Image 1 (cartoon, rainbow, N blue to C red):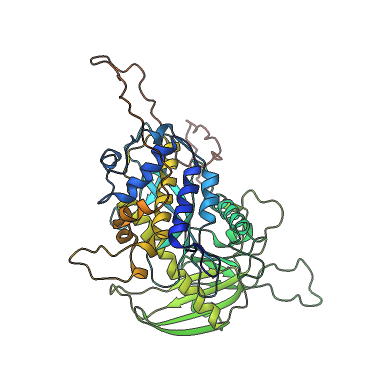
Image 2 (tube, rainbow, N blue to C red):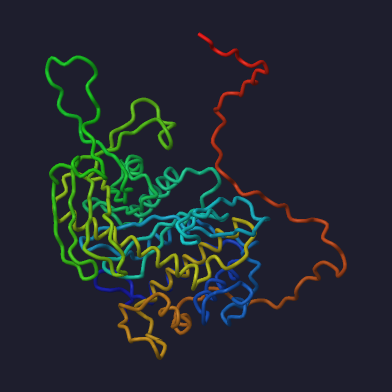
Length: 481
């Protein structure tokens, strides 16, 4: 029986076995223990609560000390993830979503490199910073409504890192790996990168301008952009203007006539009205992320899209959504494609929720950030195995759950059947050797080497204020004239 489809693709079981073998080759020390640890995440009966409970799974025959002592080649793992089959949009385009999710460690005083992470939903109308390890994760999105994504890269943000610069470098390296793996070839549609309002979309597009990439991101509703500079009139002295009139998001009288408009009837949101204005750019200054730029700042033109809908499924009052696209000359079909691609960005939130609540990404109390990176890559490899095993899984539904076809199974329901799929695939980990635990510290002896404690990194502005002058002690005379 052939293991290849007619178009050259491998059968799902062969593709899953190949991926498991290549993941094992990425583990350079304590490889058997790390590999079985990932299998235990996939074969557990319920959510992963702790490493101690995970060691009780039958597929995990070794301890979990390999997280602290093992080694994993992250660069090789990135190449392996870039070579697996990836989902594509209807036009064959790769759509990548980038976002930062946090591994909160508020009580880990002995863990270094913690940063104050901005969390949401922990207080009423307030953002409460919590110490933790933020990770920038890039996933390939599937078309249509789905809770599946394809994680391709994860990078922990170190203290002092600039998110825009780090994300641009992360995307650049990922696009180069995808081109090397044959996922993008000359003549294919450009890769679409979708981000939320926390990213500076014009700066991201400027840093990736030499790659086949388009950037689509949401903008805040209080932004002010500029139109292109008008043509220079004759007999006018002085320097020509670089920016045109203002386009204020909150003032409709500054918008003018839309460049293109589309109206779409949707099932969840009613009538969706999308309008776009062409060649708008922000007026950049030598501050914040552009503080280190030399010379004249660039003009990054793009298309602004405003999306209005009738209602939300939750019954809340809908607010307009402003999007910025790095391309220009968009027509009605492009506008529809772009705002629908942005709605697919929220699928990455389902992946984050599965990482944390089911696969137990943030459950272990790991001390060092290096061990946290190894555990993160094991979780990404485990999730990719679920995605490759999706056509092979049976629907082991609970009595209160509705039946679902194979193509509509969620990652959690595929995980229920992975224990039956695993024996059919490659299992390169060998049998464990018998051993006995070490003696440990004798009873009654105190610990003479306490673990050092680390402060949480906080961003501080440079001290540019003038020194305070001493206030004179003699009072000023009153003016009588």
